[in-house]
Image (cartoon, rainbow, N blue to C red; front, side, top):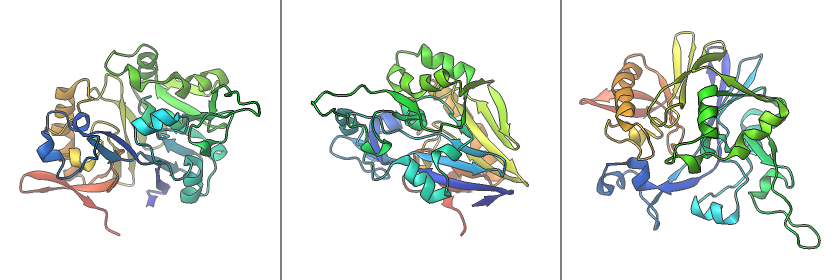
Length: 298
């Protein structure tokens, strides 16, 4: 997709499944199951929709998905059903290889947004996290290395500080193997609460899902593409009370939705829903007092 002189591509990572009750918070199952049918474990299907931006000078990747470092047990817990490695999808969608990426941006360091920052050194990334075994049957050490060897990895300083000393409620979402290898190579750069890595692309810290998660906004030639990250993870979360149980500050997520969604309708934004399996990028309209997502024309 051409966007104000930039090339934009959505890079889907892989299908995975999370508990539907956690994904919809106080919303009763009798309501959310109509739009997101759960499996026998009460989990709903999701995706990680990473965004590739080619500015001509930089090749930017916003988020890197869930990664491929998972054990067999973890793969079952999260229902990860990987058909191909992220690097292959990236190449098929953009013609670029991991070494071509020059900037990686993480809105936050939860494993489903930063898991693809690194890969296992001891086995190819398409192994899906299965332990490598030596000829004599010894399991080899699991050591992570940057997946994008020539990229600057950008994350807010406050988010990195939080990841190193997480809250009890989100501790399980932070895996140091997703950022410490870049600290060792000097590729990780900490950023302020608001910054502009390339012309027109702005990151902003907004409290709601957590204290330090960021959203992103790309403005070019009078058009806006907005990434909600986990504040509005799917288009099914557009109704104001439909807020994740994972959010540490749900009333502030609500305030964000009340302020931002009418603006998105009025200004005809394109909106990126990071976890949406069906409609990752849409425009928003107001219909009978309700804000709804509609597919892009063409």
